[in-house]
Image 1 (cartoon, rainbow, N blue to C red):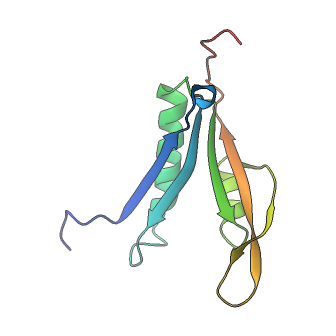
Image 2: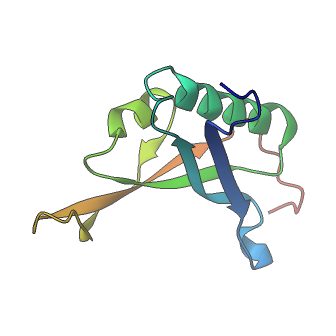
Length: 116
């Protein structure tokens, strides 16, 4: 295998306007087929969350939205909490619909610089 092949990725971004500057949203982690079931996703999640905890005390929450048939228990096990359900949001191509499940992880090292 070529050592320059991308096998997994993680991305999230700070929301705008400024009133959301303490939030990283749309957390997405992708592990490409052929590289799944090797714990790469968990490694990316835990590395990102550890980095935020240790280096980004301006971020209090990290958000993701998971399809209900996705790894909800996995996300809970790494510290995310369920914040609701968006019923019948996903058309799973079989004629059935599933909910999206908004989840968040909270940074215990957050420092509120604005004094609020």
